[in-house]
Image (tube, rainbow, N blue to C red; front, side):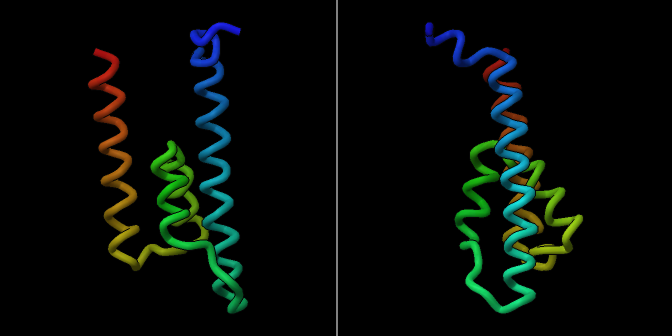
Length: 94
């Protein structure tokens, strides 16, 4: 398999759908664990999923599950990361 086939639009879309789904689910899982006083997903892991392309899934998960919405690190950090990702996409596509 050639390297250019790995980075096809189709594969990029599949990857982004998967990482956003994982980020969304991680917010649900962490919320449930918080509710029942169980071991939590580290905040750095939640941000890692967002950094790897799951920012939209993370933000949607935050809103749907009302999770981490009062923490400034998440309240402002996730949208800021999304803006940086959009700017990077625009810069690399020019």
